[in-house]
Length: 475
Image (spheres, one colour):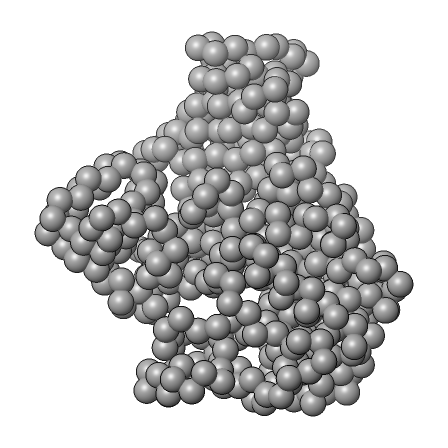
């Protein structure tokens, strides 16, 4: 039996609680909030010690598959596999499918750790001591969750009542508590016998699958069938859509953890946040003498205990206290920090109106397997974009029925195919692609290629792309 833990990272969520930076097509796990990496990359780094961990498995969906692969590549981290969920079915089917996959790849005596990809965690000695305790407890046959020592009577987290101590240093779970009212949270905090439910788990694979089968058989059947009928696609494993869709939409907490008599909790005091609100981001950031956390271009006058972040333009904030001011390229959010748990309600309101729905779905910057683009300016029959192409990558060989394109190189060196001609385009040089002409853009260099693309024509939608050859297997 391998002593190594098999990490399973859940990266398919499309939460919008950190709007306007986080959106359905650009969720928070793939965004850089604090530090030099995204939350997903920070999660990868926590499981990068090859003496402790096997190469990680990532569960995500179709929309994020290339983001996962590219952000892992940026860190030089090899993955054991990328499982693609065909539909959203909450965490129980995803965890069960991962467990079946782990059993096939590493044996059913393996221990797997389930991690969220969008948590901020300080991976210090306290953290890794908790990991060791959880691993030992899982090897004894327990289904283990991590309970974070509360620092405040938070109402946005579920709680775990801690039971009797076990030989491994973990404790039995006495009960799980739903997100409480403030008075109940204050009572639990004062009692000292409760922990926040972190959503991090350590499971012995054989026992987990047995419990899923016993407590939620439809989930277990769907997971086994989805993996058995899975298909390989480049570096991805596509779970079978029909089988996976047959699973109930249920969390691992409801399906298993709250029902099993075999649950254990590792109480731990490492720094942890699920970054579920702008208030949580403010608490995590570096605060100046006035209690302000800033990012990007911002000037604050007579302002205290506030979060000010700009990804576009310069923000000037005067005479406010306890507010969040967040500016993306195309939207600005202003609200009280102590009310930021309710951003989700605002997003639902925006999504319900035709004029603002797109602001909750897509971001001006879109990522592709070759890099991505940012929409700079839209007008009548023209559009301006900034393209960025990763070294060594190339776009599909394609053509457009309704538009022509002008490309101007602003950084790096481009290899441009137009018809039967291949030419090099360097900084401050440009090239024209006529409507209907077959073309391709590639980056043969060692640095990021940046191009300004000006599209002109009667229709400028992204669906006016006829791919002739695509190394990423897209239609």
